[in-house]
Image (cartoon, rainbow, N blue to C red; front, side, top):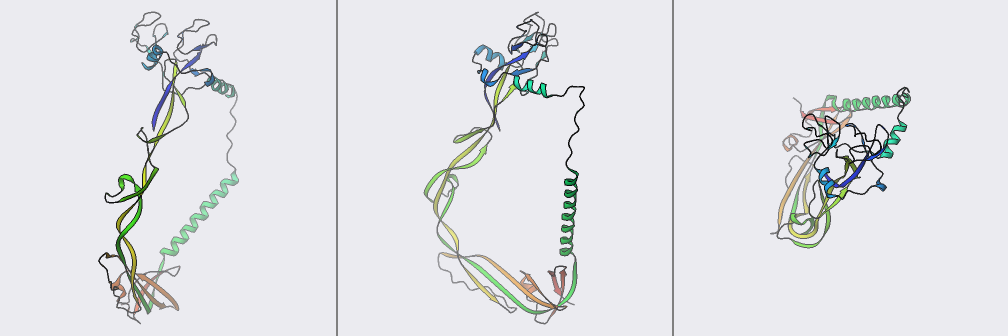
Length: 337
């Protein structure tokens, strides 16, 4: 996320001696002359009352960095000063640099917070705790869900071995047939193959950048103000950049599925379907599935697999050991000894 500066605005500070509101750049109170204390809190005047600072000299002073309070007389000095403006003291000998970077409240916000803050003697109100009944229902709900999950896993994982007799079998094998033909697709312009024909393009969102880039829409959050430590605040927004690019419809040659050849049966001799391919066709992906039906303990069970070697052992009337879960699903099979 990019940090965007909109400029600098003046701040004010309240004299702790006479409560006079003074402009931020003023180093001493305009009413009583008291120097600005090192720990004084700057505040932002209401937005309708300030303008962005235009004075070049003042802007240079702000951008130079936080002011320094003289270790001898407490006077605030620009960051570029080596000696105190008031007493001439060496600022490098313990001069205190003002804190900067913190967000600034408006005078109205600061006064509102001061009025709403409880007095030190007042005992704080106890925090309101959530309803006990809601917590009880929530705990019961968690317990019920946990028990249901345990039950389901138990039914699936706990199995019994039974003997089953093969009563029937079924198999199916299929092959996708693909043809090399003209197709219409969509993609961003730099992802389109070179030998394609572009039909039309339009601007579409592609990604969000944290830094400014060409052909991007700037999306910024609310303005906030950071104390520069020099009697002014920097107006700042956090911004991202939504990048748009040409998204196009185009035609190209590609292999696409046009048909499926299928072979099936109810014996133990599965085979692949015969393909009669033209010059612009090819064999695509293939699939195979086998189902064996058993009877055992008065029940009928089915087991599906893609293992042709296992399937070909399922002679009619042969006996197998079936691992069956509590829901009646067959988890695994193997020929009985």
